[in-house]
Image (tube, rainbow, N blue to C red; front, side, top):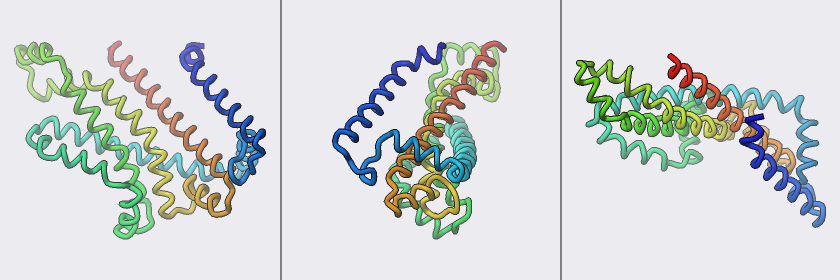
Length: 250
């Protein structure tokens, strides 16, 4: 009930927009190949489930693996930059610049360098996932209350103890915020990587649907991407509540 109270407004707005969309398509008699009605998209989605589920599963696996690798790299990088401020000062602008490289342009180069295997796909997802984690973790480390650091220094705590017992726990809320952003990006990164060359996945399904002018199937893919992104976001949120609450209780 609490979840419904918190999200009831968004659900009502979503239903209203879908209803408006349905009404406009029916009133204007818009052809389905141009803009299908939500009811038709839903109907086609149900029919496509047996064959489409294989693609959904492939994209989900790729997204989770890419999210895990990208987040792990992002966290490790944040720790290194936090421990070595001079390195952070030199490399931080380069990290920001790395996010300005269009993935859709870089991806074909990755195919040339690494082939059609998993490596270029994971690099694409990792590139979109690692940056939010780095920035969020660094901000969390930086915002450690100075009075607590002072007390620990007065108590003779080493830098390692300071990090594990104060800075890292203090950075957890920020870190999970970065993870939630990365989780939503990971599905889109997986779909983009599948456009480059894959046998299965939502990206492959979407490409084939576009080529055959099945606009309804393209919308099925779009709604599935949105659903998976929200699902991964919710999963990270559950871990956030469990982990941070567990830490606080401990």
